[in-house]
Image (cartoon, rainbow, N blue to C red; front, side, top):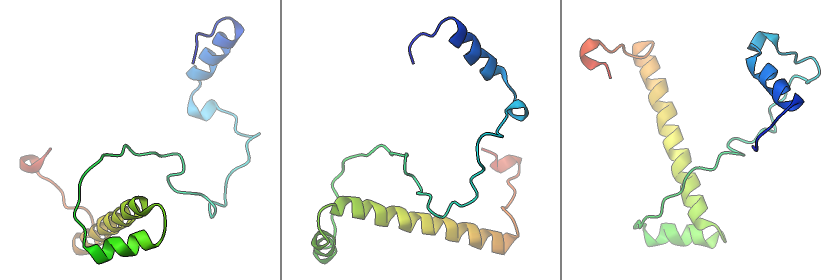
Length: 108
């Protein structure tokens, strides 16, 4: 954003100093239906190029679905990792009732 001066600068500074409970949200409708929300719509992770060896039949299957096979590989990997993380969370919470506590010896 470029340099702002005068009345606009004063208004921005006044708004910046507002505490959360002082903000008037009465003219903004509350969002209660998130069923059509898209996860990650505005998130664009940094991509990194690499060489990977895949089984020929797996690659053929992904390529047969048309353009964008690398994006599909990335999506499959992300969904798989997300599933692993959520499974680990469920297992840990089930086994321990909560996250195990780290003592001073294990503190990061």
